[in-house]
Image (cartoon, rainbow, N blue to C red):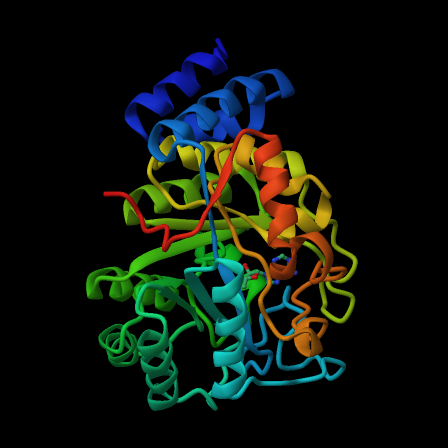
Length: 348
Ligand code: 5AD
């Protein structure tokens, strides 16, 4: 019958299940079996990373976006978004602040904004690497040509985050406008990995129309890609999008998928995301206990933080922000963890 603990044991052992078994786990898990899963995930995190938690300073470069993803608050057809973009000098200022606070990875994230040409991004990368040779740079700038990715890698970028969002083409089509495709997204991820980036994919938990089949497909895709990072967080509706009235994903479901991913990829860099922190004030701690080992506080200039609103009520000041790193350290120490000053690379 449905012996879920044995299924979880098998997942830990083989780092994958077949689709039917993934669906069974997704449909049948209970708070009790989750507890069993979280213990394993927490232990695997400790076996691979000890008590170390890595922090990344998130710099939100631009909320201009040429795309029109149905779920996203900075989609191009949202006329109410106040658009901004950071100049290279602004970005360098963020890095200066971040370095002093102890950050050794800077994540440059933004909408797909043509203002940031290949040359401009290379110029920014060169400047950061010159002033902070001991730091890693992660890019999260969406879909670009292989040539662009290669140029940025050659200019010093170390990592790239590009969530696949959903690994089922029909579901992808319900979340995105017709000009975007899952095939193209997967091609980008493949290129990034081949070029040599530490690569991250990921998906939203509880996105509209999502089913257990879709989630099982996401897990199988993650197993196939073998990314070094996986970003997952709950879907949260944004009032200026067509999904304004759709329900948000839950904390419990998000923790469940974090833990499953830790079992599938024991060494993965797994953030407890801002979205998780947004729906639960203890989201970060809970995430760590479900296997997460990365936190990405906001390092964007205060003047733009409220404008990078991917979803409603996105936290941007207070304890999740980079300025509060002392508080974050204390909170992590309270659960037996230690925030590390260092690049926090993937451990092969
Ligand atoms: N809720 C949660 N996450 C969202 N993202 C975009 N919009 C939302 C939303 N409404 C996520 C996407 C994207 C990442 C930058 O933010 O997964 O890849």
